[in-house]
Length: 577
Image 1 (tube, rainbow, N blue to C red):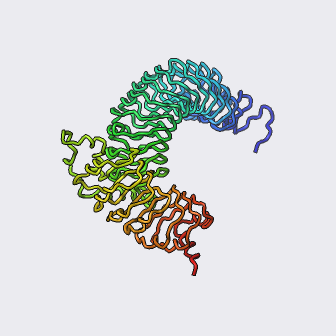
Image 2: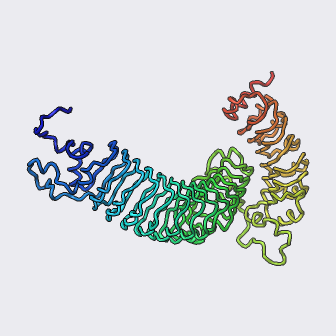
Image 3: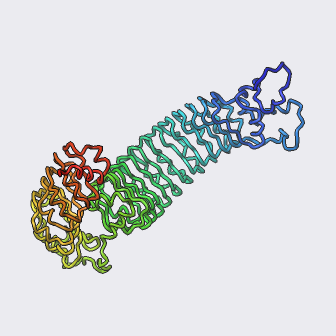
């Protein structure tokens, strides 16, 4: 509770209360100032200050007020033995400017003025020769005074969330600078002279308007953390690959079409290149990343993952979300991943119910596809005249290591005989002939009848399936694109998964579907089904039934959202008695 005092009457709490006669000190309790003289630290954060009180600048210059009050001092309170102010925090106020009186605190080591309304810094800042940390983030700075380059002891400079469009010449003279944050400004270029910042460990350039990086940036031999997220980068200078100390590299939300190689980045632990336009990931991009723990490739245009992904033995987190990947190398299952994100890909080689179970189940499934009787280390295609010329068009590596016969994306009307000939005596469990112009299933596929379990014939021009498909004794997965559900499917007793979404299928036969006792996944999304027969509810072995995107009226969306069990129960309740 405050009360009025007569002029000349001393308040016994004066040492802890601001006195109005001390220029601006009313906003600063005297107790704080007294403590600051003793500790060398003053925190005025969040006090609604529109200017820095003069008593703060003159803290180490003027005789303190308590000395003029004829008070007795203990040995621990001798004001003339005060400590120079080394740390000043004035963040979260309403400061629009700082005066040149800043020079009266030459012992400052830390100056924190973040979250104010500063549009400039005073030239007197050069007097703070001992300053090691300067935080002026979240202000309205449009430029920096060149005097900032005199702060030769500066180790941390935090300028994020301002309105900087350029940087002063000579910034490279801050040879002791270890941490520089320029994120969320309006920079369009980075000076090549930055390369002289030889002590820099962390550089944040994210959320600017950079369309390129200078090759000279690679000379920062101590740089461990480089953040260039949210810029306009279309390429990365190849010299970047020579940064031996780099551990964290962020390049998300740019316009990159490809990755550089990283031959010297042996210590790189995290590579974030999500939300770009990268279409291809090759062995050359991966083979040097011996220490990588996190690889973020989400929201790109990748169509496949190279087998060499298994070289990344340290990898713990792999994000492939929202790409165009239709299949994964089975050898991916050999990695000790803690997190694998695959949502948003047109995956055909892994059942949806497995994908929904999470990382460890997906890896377990991929490992199960790698048979114990795989090729030995010596089973390789010799680079001699014995190698058929046609085999150069065939992925022999996939046959030998993944047991995959792959002739996809060739736009071929026929599968050449040499494709089947290349199998020779090798075991093949998967066939991928997708994205061709096939009008019929190749007859020779029956040669694989005793070993193949997965067949991908999607994105062709097939109108029917031959009855010979029933001869594929181990077939459990079949990916197709049809206008009608082929009759032969009902006669493959081992079939577990039918993915026939995004077609023009108009009907299904529930009676014949019921005879498929091993069928657990049926994907009929985005077809032309006008009616869902109630008898389909009798297919009690189904664990995943997907019907979204069809023009039928019942079951309604609310029922579909409850999941497969609810849909089957709904259909069973409507079977005529």
